[in-house]
Length: 194
Ligand SMILES: [Cu+2]
Image (cartoon, rainbow, N blue to C red):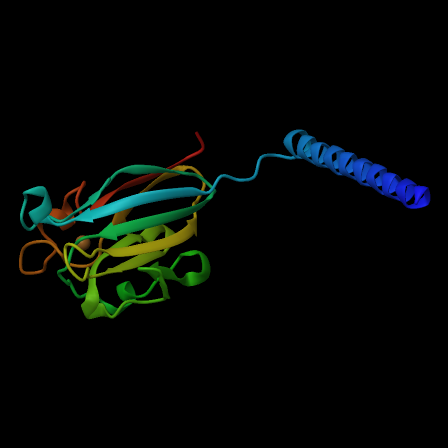
């Protein structure tokens, strides 16, 4: 019996040493990660909302909010655009297709898509200078918005104009009013290193 007792004691000691070693290794790794390596890149997620004119009290004037905004330059950025607009504004074929995003797609309410049927487009988020085009489908209702998420790699610092290419504005062409007014269906995106 003393033999067994001694074995048990040795086992306990061994377990104790192993635990200490594991703890020490853990601490060492944490310290190394904190000092020797750069912090992991921060994922930048920007949120945009499209309100209907009815929601803002200016009928016929849907708007992206914010319309003028800043993103980090030369970075992988994810944008989520939540649109409450349930009215379609059919686009030319090219604006129904996703372009310029990471992976060439967008997600619509969680489902990956590379295009939206032209008659189902409500708005687009388009930065022509970057060949970026993100079609936004009609919302099922004002209470059930279309949620579009996509990622893209931003350019070096600078300012680009974005424009909606779905003729959702006024006039016979649909290109009047909000389509031609900064702060509604067009605006500025600034890419900044700061
Ligand atoms: Cu629009």
